[in-house]
Image (cartoon, rainbow, N blue to C red; front, side):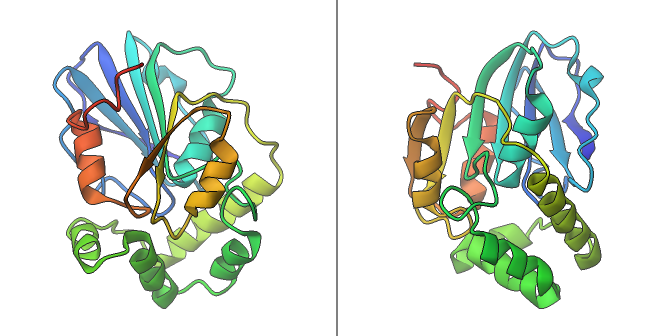
Length: 224
């Protein structure tokens, strides 16, 4: 796993963001809220995590998206950190599952037929609209298709040999137009486990992440 500080000013608070499969720092190199450092995690070909990077912070906002929800839960379970809020976005703790994640046939088919063309189609489904595709491509990840296939294969293997992680989230944002983690599957998993926040958005929403990282997304980071 790559852990990269997008913003490091020795602030007392930290935004810790686990991005989804295929991401890198070009996709989420966005302004963080004043008073927060910003640490981005991506590239899950292995789940090695340097916990010392979280030391010294008095408050941590945890944000995770897509496959990053499972990864964050896996590496942070059993650890005690001063969380201000733990926010899961368009993902579950059963990421490859017919009823509560990405259907197994869809995941395995994507991996088996993975190519540049597959990646283009995936990103179109992820973004949903022409406008969102343009926003994504304005700062899309610069990683090779071969590397992304390695990451997808590693995730498939690690998920298959792991139990569902034991980790509690404060809120789950569910994109009602999500075509990757279908909204019904997300709702099925999170019901009774955390506060559900349905949003009229696709799997990836440029404006949502910009507002969420900057702290301008009203109410998301305030406990009720």
